Length: 235
Length: 401
Image 1 (cartoon, rainbow over the protein chains, first blue to last red):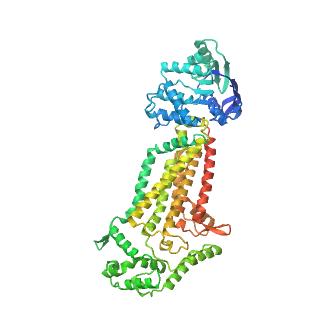
Image 2: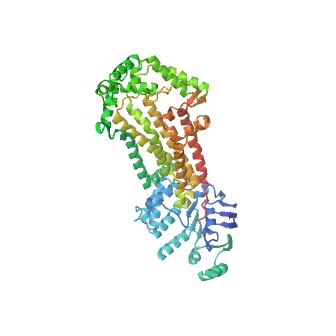
Image 3: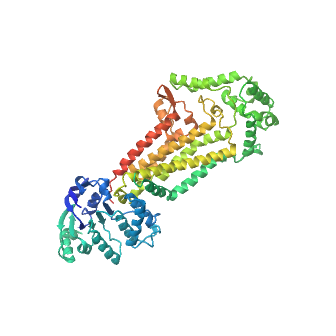
């Protein structure tokens, strides 16, 4: 399993959101840090095939990001995703399972399993419009796992979760990293330190740090602040 | 076509989940039924006194017309009609109030209306002075038919006159009030259904963007092609279902009131200038087929706009604008091609005058009438709109936010 990002760029009229970024990711959790507007979400959208890069390429084991085969291996939790208020939690998962190409019986089994995993089994038949923010976020995590993805892209997955749930999902993500490539974007430095095998830091559309973080949480936080110090002072 | 039917069911459900859809459907259902029923409401007054209710009048005239069923409009019947009308005294303001009209003439009013529409009597005295003449009546009709074809090419005129010559004459009268009343309601029904489609399907793609569900859909393996097919199928089947339901309800209501008889009545009793060999029942079937085909192509167009404009308001506005334009715009006959294309627009085509249009299109040594041309044209456009819509949906870029 290998995700190859080769000189990928995204340029808008007068702004370069992602600037010739190249990376090769393997199984494990890759934590992506960066200030708001650094290009994290743009990069993730390009990795999920919903935003076309201006230049460069993305392949997963040789499959191009624009192919259906690539998307079959992909699980994606966007930062701010929508839902269908009239659908129940179970319907939502079954609908997305159908979109991911799962046969009906397998979709049903997988949905039940994931509803239990995200502790929504007792609320599965309630309409999503009655869910709290945390419940919706848990449902979002569940949908990302429906197809047992080989590449899992998570944009702020623990946002909106209470501390206990956050730790539980952090451990779940670490577990998923043992068999998939997990790209995790978050502002929570402790999450990265606890579970990320590789740390990526983005600044102004470029990866300014890429590697294993051997030191502790405080050191990463200090390093992070040092990198973005200029902006922080201005702010 | 993996999971197409499963996705189709979810997409259909999404359409039905919209409250606005139910409200619009209920309003349109009520309006279309009222269009059929409303002519029977109210009463006829003469000098402040009630003559009869519209419903009573309909019952009475239907019975008289049914009594004439199967009789050819020939010299015998025209003379009978004239004899009856000559009994009405001329010195009355309103001859319909006279006992003579009610007793003798009214049973022939259907024949009188046919003759009057061709000869255009200015008043009762002119009618009474007229010498009933079958040949003169049909000759006057033919002259009018020729005049109505003047804007066409010589070949087209010859085609229609040949068709007219083939019509069995004298025309045999059949009571078909149900069919004629329904025919005139189709134009309104068409407009209502196209508006319903525009309201209910304008958000089918664009709402995924405003709801921000597009990220999940477009990143899933079947989210670009299969989902598009499912949405398209759901949208078109929704449009067809609504059109079929409203069409059927309107027809059943109309025929229950006016009677189911008259299927084989010649179209010339509704439009005497027409040279088409069509019956009342065939006219209704053609209108229903056109309504379904036009609903499908309208649905494909609305969904294309929804995918391309990414705005339900935009898609709705364009459609509503087009519908309004067809209501108010009138293209002069000398601009033949523009006129023919304009008449092909769904909101113009689903009407009695659309079906009876004399515009012809050459087709392998013969001609297609406008309604015959409309069906394949709608099919081609539905495919083109669908392909363009798929391109717009699958190429959508999630940026900003």
